[in-house]
Length: 632
Image (tube, rainbow, N blue to C red; front, side, top):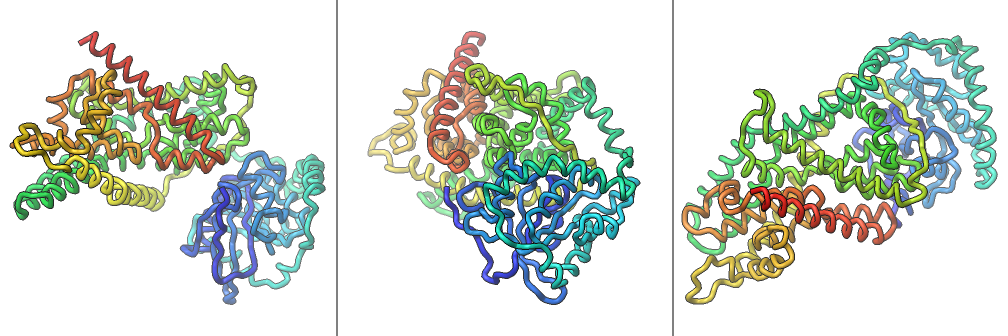
């Protein structure tokens, strides 16, 4: 678990940014450092560490550390513990900051200033960045930076982290040599500091009240547009209905909007396969390129439009400030299974990929809740499952409307996502019933940020990053495994006089025959069984593996038929439903298991999670297959 710290070659004075979550601290960090950033993990822990370089107007180079968001210096989560360790000088391999910039949300001074008072007690040189000053002015909260500086006894400068040039006043202030000399940088005794902090925190609230009173801000309670929207969004009846409608429409759009671009990609893949095949003579090179590379990569890239649409909506909800409201609305439901609404955002992130979802559990203070969230995060339907769902739904579910407005295929996709969610809640409920700590009531306390229009630039950047990650997987892991599958399915060559397809005599055919014994009770043939093996590395590889296996299994015109047509003719409906059930609960990819190992500090939890998910997937597929056979 030990990971080396990343330091810049040009070492310099260390400036640390500290602030409450959602105060705009990271946006200000990005303004100050631009592209000169490095991301690693703190030594000995898995909390992300962001460091950058800042050049002041006079040419001085500073190291800038973006510390995790914290509400106080009395840590309640791994994120807050790292912030406290750095400020107290206890962080492994890192010195105490030479200067601390306390970033405060100007629209919520009552909460933010308590952290400023706690940082001041550490004796470090300190400056306050009054962020979101423009929003405070519009909301009727005129904050006088000079008056606030006199009250706090430290310099205060107004900033706007989301606007170009909004950091210039702070950047200029950092050239003041006197600023770096304020405070006493003597080390704070570790044991005494925590005790003093817990005692002093009680008086911070009263001190903040007095400061706001002297500034004439103690009675200012602005009525914002967010408050008016929340009367509907957080309504006990209208709120959950609206959330369900939003999620439902997202899954409808995934199929309805992606139909045309998916058709274009299919036509392009078919054209490329035909063109390359016409240029090459028959042989293993032609088979590798056409049946392995083009068919394999094209079989996965065709689902890129659906993944982009899903990511677009997730980014839209995140950018607008709606996601924390969804967590609040679901707190009662999640409390019934032994979790809190704080688990919602990591679980929602897992719909894109379980890896960032598992990493997002670092913000959960309760160790038991964090561990349970990690255990059920892989049950959320990640984007890697989407190509498999799309393939099977397109092959076996007719494309027609229900009630004149809804797509049947979209309804089935929504049902598969819902099955994963209810499966996760069931696992959490079982853990609640059989663990004493799971029955404890933990009230939800979280901040609801102000609503704002999503930034098109941020959404486009987020989509570009996710498309890049997906394409790298196609060009790296997926393509490599597809070529490996082609090799296993092509060698050794069939003996003289063989009458069946060549793949039946290959390594893949032999391995598939052995695995089919295990998976036959749930309706999987040997082609599905062998395709599941590379799917352990990346789930979407199942599609390209099936394409390779069936391309090499077929003869004549059938070899060029679309995979959707092939499986719809050769599989039963019971087999298709069984495979869908398998992928709702299937064991996670190796990358996710490695992330769980890193986050939990050992192999115990990855083994437990992989084992229970395999058993759950097998049981769900067995029941689905047997019931489908009985009904059909």
